View: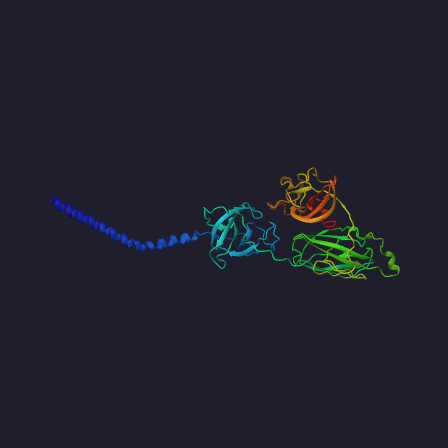
Length: 431
């Protein structure tokens, strides 16, 4: 009897086990939606880009895929602040998925804190397969074990195309009695500064009231030359596009006044007259020879030529006043550590062995410049802080002066560390 009862219990247990097994099997079908939901969660966790106002362009709801890990590279190739040929490769729509390859730390976008950038490969949308850099804060669902890049790398940087030729044509006619010359120009770097200098017919320096300007959005420059009071003759002028360092030279002619009573009112003494010594015009040109009869010379490709020939360059020097100050917030300036001459047109020479010892100068000191040239970009502001962007004395330049020290040694000093009124080249010859 006891054996029979055990068998019955065993059978009952087996029956219960079978029922549980059947229940479990039937439950598998109801698990399918759960597995699908989890799969969807996995897809949602894939790294993707998302838009923020800090990285949109012209109001577009897109994220910039850049060829370098640096914001502000939206300018034409070769003209961005980092000095590399990087630019925006593509504009990715919100939600575009990416693969995070590696990361580097460079500088944050203006007004931001994070300096981290991800090198990514696009995995969805029209730009799938494209590789580039995205600022870290614009990537969702970041892969936590993304390695650091072995190097910054610029393999996506496109080759810089040749810049558009500088074109400048002086228009109009004038004499010492009056009239004003104007210009047609193109090919300058939009939004960048240009510097300008001029010389009289005898080759002496013509001091302009303003020797720098800002290039228009269409690549043109503002150039007007009121002629009243200037001695008749052919004048020369040089204009430097500071965005690229290219320079052009031109000649234009101011005609003699008509014979008669008006003749006595013209200044023919070669000093520039009452309208010349502090002229508030920006002048520049692109070559070509002067015409007689007061017609301005027309230039073309940026090379000088025509008739009459270039006036001979006389050895000359300019006395510079040092302005060794850097921005201190939105409105203030403060004295920087002493500036110094260097053997090359590069910054940070004190730590690189290219400084001329014993040539330190501070604001108010004077130097003798004998030539000018182009070199490394220099600024008196903080590239990593937007607080000084509105400071009216914020300056940057690629112009360097060649300076003769008191003991005869020769070195270079950036025009940024010179009085603002003397940063345009001063008509000095090239070094």
